[in-house]
Length: 295
Image (cartoon, rainbow, N blue to C red):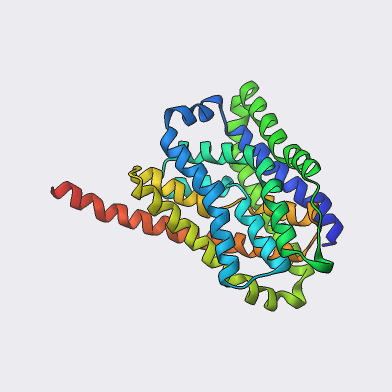
């Protein structure tokens, strides 16, 4: 797959389809939950938009990442959740409504927060001949066009043709996963010779960030006395990111293929860890039910 085709066609199309599908699954009531469940929404947004980037910086420092690898992992930490997090919340029997609300709200805010938080990181990690200047205003407009716009179009379709939108949800989710797989395969193919080195550099750090985010999101929510279902959902929302958004930023906006390696590796890892998280949560739930019944 040619780099220009991957970056200029497949990536934007993949992200557009994902966000369009998200929009078709939304109704105005999903945003009303910000008022109805303010504590759960506030905890989820704070953990995902403030704590996760800080956790990402901590992992970067822990593993001594620098340059493109550091930026790639940080971009991933700045990215919103996606349809995968909604699916895993369902499999984990979490609070699906909360999952949808968090994904929608964060996805509409990150076009502003990604460039604002990424610009100083580029100055810090990309020094000397690696320096990259990020046009913040242009980046915000680009991200709004490829994320917020299709969400709005999807919501309009849902309001006008609800039956079609509901029937399209599952096919669009599978199409989104197919596009993500194509993007990851393309990145791996382009960097095939350096892949072992990249895995050595970014594999363990991506796994550490992913698992730490899942665990932190769950236990902080429990510590703040949110319900189990809400805590499960927040753990998933913090730990499962929209890898396609991160790959779009690194490939199309920053135009650096090496930066796409951490998001690509993370996207592969999160399916396995997310599935394991769902299994453990359900096993814990089954163990708790007999104990509760005996009391």
